Length: 508
Image (tube, rainbow, N blue to C red; front, side, top):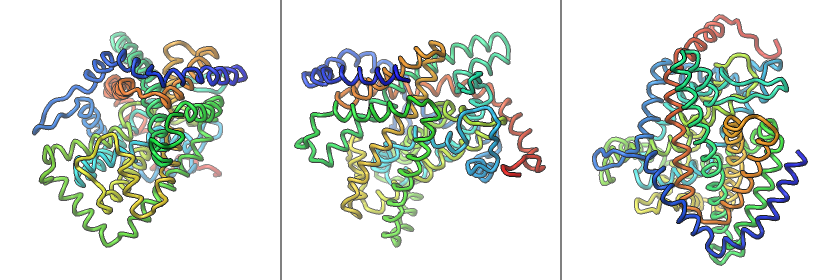
């Protein structure tokens, strides 16, 4: 731990010189160098086909089809287990003697901190602007279906996790792809190893980029916007912002998943409640307009006159925002949920149902309603201006809200970085082995990229990292298909015990 603190101090010293270089165009050189590779990777991952003149990425279809199949296969588990999932989150069935490192609530908070964030604030504004109010309907539907994907992958994450003598655990797609598929025979064992390595590589790339540099870059941009834009004294001091954020993130990730869970279990409820309350306040202030807003959402979902691509374009925008916001099927959340204290893997699947529900059905829908009610959606919006559009919508009701939104964006970004540091670390140690050296090396690199993301304009790097995150869905979901019978067996055994009253509640 002390070595990591020394490492953080060393990085801070190094970055003063790096920041000066950034101002002389080193970020442009990095962009030019990486662009051909980033374009190739992004082009492969986001390969599209055209429907009604709308380009639909194959990865989006891959995610939505899987979510639909899982929902049907488990007989709408997203509805059947909703009540019991809440009981588990509340701690009604906590087992203090079970293997694991965090409670059900802490595991959910950690996973939520990796998804609730800029996608809910900026992405929804873009979806509604480009797809019209009707995009909200498809966003909610995709979030509903995505609950089943989270249920599946998080159950498997706990089922096949590694448990170590010191009480720590490591889980996620890397482990259920190797151990789970190996149970099906030698041929599947080889396939599982290949899929696991691919997933881990994609996860590390996504952790450094989309889960780190993008978050730092966007939160710094919002801070600059509310402090004067180009004339702000912070405008050329991204490195300073990055150093502060790196220090804060470093102090948390030193403690491992237990430290991460303690922080996220406090930050996530606070920032989510603050944001939701503000959104609900605006909705209540415009209560007479709510029925017409829902009419526009329903009508727009199936007619979409004047929207590019018609109904297909609206459906695509809604599904895209939900999938890109809650990451259901990507497999990242299974890494956090795997650390839970439980002897019944299926319980964490029930808890994971709440992730897309909170992230997409609640938070994203409130954002969309505020934008629709205030008339802030703009079909000609620049896709990079999502945060500003949402900020403008809230500002119409509360002139001071851009400052609150700035705090929320920064907290969202920090919590996302904290969670993705854990995802990336587990993928890193899967590739290079569990040791203090590999652990410390990854954490130092992660903190280094926090400052890089704040102080440089790395467009190509961000494109590359986004592609890496969604590339995770290909090996993850392929493995999940093969392991569906395992989840069903766990579900049937547990559900029988639950219905027959054989489960022991905490305190009984």
